[in-house]
Image 1: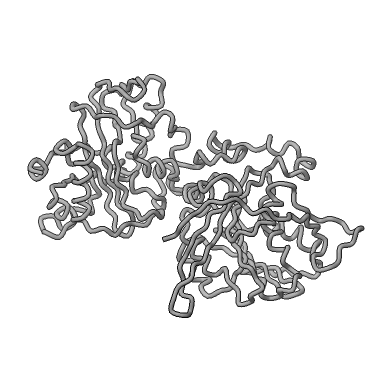
Image 2: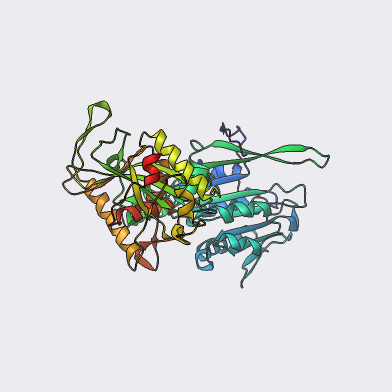
Amino acid sequence: MALMRPDRLPALPLPILLFKSLNMPQDPSAQIVWKPNFGGQLQFISSPVFELLGEGDRGGGKSETGLMDYLKDVGTGLGPSWRGAVFRETFTELEDIIAKSEALIPRIFPKAKFKAGNRPMWVFEGGEKLQFLAAKRASDYWKFHGWELPWQLWEELTNWREPDLYLQMFSCARSSNPKVKPRIRATANSAGPGHSWVKKRLIDIGPPGTVAFDERQIPDGEGGFKTLRLSRARVKILFSENTPLLQADPEYQARLNPPNEAYRQAWLNNNWDIVAGGAFDGLWDAQKHLLPYFDIPRGWTIRRAYDWGFSAPFAVLWVAKTNGEEVPLALGRRFAPPKGSYVVLGEWYGWNGEPNQGLRLLDLAIGQGIAEREAQMGLRGRVMAGAADTSIFNGAGTASSPAADMGRSGISFIPAEKGPGSRATGYRKICQLLQNAAEERPTEPGLWVVETCRQLIRTLPGLQLDPSNPDDLDTQGEDHLYDALRYELTSTSGGLVSLKQKQF
C-alpha cells in the first residue's frame, strides 16, 4: 500500500541558469537566450523531486520551462543515455511545443539537428535525444514498453481522462547509466477532462511546494525487501511572473475569451475548485446543491438505484422523492423543496480508490452490503426497489443472474428504461433539476445531494460531453454514479418493496 507523507521542499541553492550554450564556458558578452523567471519557473527547473507538476494560469511559460528542464542536462556528459520525450494525446497537439523548441534550441545548441517524420526528435551533438510522442490510451503504453525514457514531459496533463497511461509510463523512466537521475515532469491548467485525478494526485496533497512520498517495497536481491520512496509535488507558474511576456504583450490576458465562467476561473485564476469543460458547467453549484444530512420524513419515498460493475466500479444510490414537506436542517436552517424534488441521501461506490477501477465484488456480497448499509442508515424496510442497469437481469428466472444473487439478501430492483434517446433524456432531466434547485426560491422540482455522498460530488461535476454528441455524456468518463442517478430520475415505474425486504 502506498503511503503519503507531506513535507516541504528542501532548501536548495537555486541557480540562475543562463542558456547560451550549456556545454561551453560562460561568456560575459554572450546573449542570454532564456533564463527562468524568479518564482515558479526557477522552482520547477531546480526541484529535486521525481514527479513534478508545473501548474498555473495561461501565459506563465509552462511549456518553455518544461523544455528547459530537459535541456539543462544536455552537454553535461550523459550523452546518449540522456533520452527525453514530450507527450501529448495527438501529433496535432504537439505542433505548438515543437514550434517553441525550434525557436529556442538552435540558439542554445547550434549543432543540434531536428528530424521530422512519424517520430519527430532533436538529436544533440553529444548523442542526447528529445522525442515528441503521441499517446492517448492506456493501451498505447505497449508501444513504449521496454524503452528507456528517463526524462518525460506530459504537456497539459489534465487532457488525459484517466491516469493509467501516465502512471504506466513511470516504468520507462529508467536508465542503465547510474549518472542519470530519472524524473517525470508535467504541465497543466485546471481545465480539462482529467481535472479530478490530477487534482487528487498532485493538487490535494497540499500547497505548492508540498512533497508527498509514495513508499513501495521491492526485492533487495538478497531474499528480503527494501523501501523506495518516490517523491511528487507541484509548483505554481504564473503569468504575473512572466516578465518577458508582460513587457512584450501586456494585453495578452485581456484577449483571452473563455467560453464560460468555469473556464474563466481556470484560464485566468487557475482555480482547481471548479471544473471547466464539464457537462454541468454553469449548473452545478456546491453551495446551492449540497445539504447536510438530515432525518428523512416518513412521507418521502426512498428508492435505491444501481449501476452494475465488477472490474469497473459499481454504484448504489439512495434517492428520496419529496412530498412538499418542510424539514429542519442544522443551525436552525429550513429546507422546503417543491413536491416531486429529489434528494440523493446516500451512496456506495464500489471502487478501489483509483478512478474507474472496481472492487471485483460478487453480486451476493454486494446485496449483503446494500442491506447492511440500509440498516445502518436507519432505513430498514423503507427502501423501495429503484432502477438498475438492465444487464443485472440477464438470465432472469434463473439462479445465475446478478439480480437473483442480490435478491437472496432481500435486495431487489426494477429495470432501468434504456430505450432509444434515454441517455439524452436523462442528461436533460438532471440539467433541468439542477437549474431548478439553484433558484433562490425554487418553485419547480429540483435535485439536491447530501454532502456525505462524496464520490458523486467528486465525479458528477467533472463529467464531459461526448464530442460527437453534445446531447449526451462521454461514456469514457467516470460515470457510474451518474448512470445510477440517471436510471432513477427517468424511471416511470413505481418501486415496490419485495416480500424478502419486508421480512428482513
